[in-house]
Length: 327
Ligand code: PBG
Ligand code: ZN
Image (cartoon, rainbow, N blue to C red; front, side):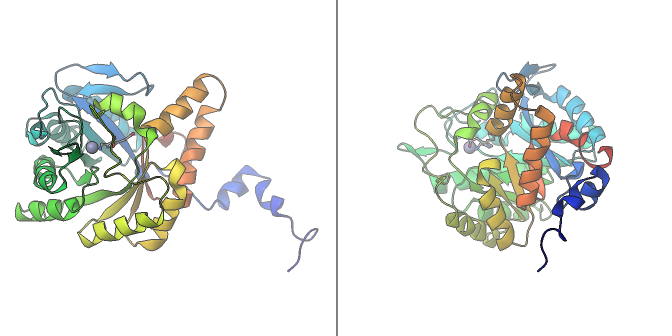
């Protein structure tokens, strides 16, 4: 093997156009999905303090956000509902007139090019903020399954292309698949949050979605940050139950897991750059400690390079203007 001075890796880096020609990873707007928090009411746009540029929006405002995302070229939009009414079992999650079904219908009319995603979980809808009904201090796994399936069905009925269960209950993908199929929604895609860690990076989200647990935490069902091999087990089980895509979440601190999952499976791998990852970049940039746009694109490039072709990110709209033909 020849070496220096014959070989000079710098040759390929010295000119921007050449660097771009040989880039191994390319970002494209269509791979970004924008998460949006929907509240009841009209004309609501309530800024989320820990997530600069993001707000809780009412259904009428969803049309504006969706049109902006579609115009930028964003691939999809993912909805989280922040309901007025909560109870022990989270029954407002399957209300056909709830914020998420209405937002889905709004997008279908206002921005038909966007792929419509609906997060499926009960923690925004339960008084106690846990991801399903409780038995003692813990979520009752098996009792949660039909309720999650009911919520997923309401979103499919409202035109969701993809339902994405984020609860981490065992068996929920199978329960959702059979409920959707029985109702004739055989073409609705399931993207499971197969690998979701019990993470401190969800802090800003829990403010945005009003889903902070009233007591305890989610360690009984979300994964231990120490584990990577277990991620493969979770992914295999969800695929066996009928998941069409699998997600790893958070993204940045778990790129080894994204990479391992991408090597293991033959379905699309999704990564979620979560609220805390977003907020850290915004906070450091606001102090002038990092170059915001540069770090934004670098963080997304890292996620794509690790093997995730689909990226949920709060930067979705802005990132579209910074990738692809414009660069
Ligand atoms: C709800 C859910 C959470 C996120 C997505 N779905 C929070 C949690 O599990 O507490 C986090 C997303 C983010 O932080 O951006 N199950
Ligand atoms: Zn939840």
